[in-house]
Image (tube, rainbow, N blue to C red; front, top):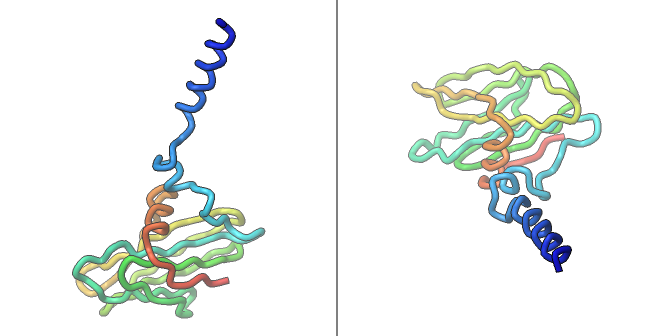
Amino acid sequence: MNKLLVALALALSATACTPGPGSEWQKSYGKTFYEPKEGMAALYIIRDDPGQDVTPIHISSSRSPVGSLVGLSWMRLDLPPSLYDLRAYGAQGNTELVITVNAGESRFLLAEPKPPGNAQLVEISQVPGRALVRKGQAVATYQ
């Protein structure tokens, strides 16, 4: 009888330590989030809910257009390890962000408007980045 109670107590304590379906861990690291392709890095560029400002933010990499983000949306770039010159363009100006990506990593950049009429890219961590990707609409994936 005592062995049964100990086994039951251990089973219940192990279940209590497992994250539930609505936990922060599963929201950011759930099974449906895709990892980078072999030998590549995944770069997610995300635009959070813009509120009243629906001006598109155009993104370029090494002066080549990559795409535009309007509203709550995101794009994924599958990149080989290297140095990248990324730019976010607002209605009147742009800002530059130079980053180096390594194989196997996932990075998250937030594209946001910057007054007056400019835009910027800001790196954010994994948990808020993955949460925004799950919440937003995919615009494109570039390989």
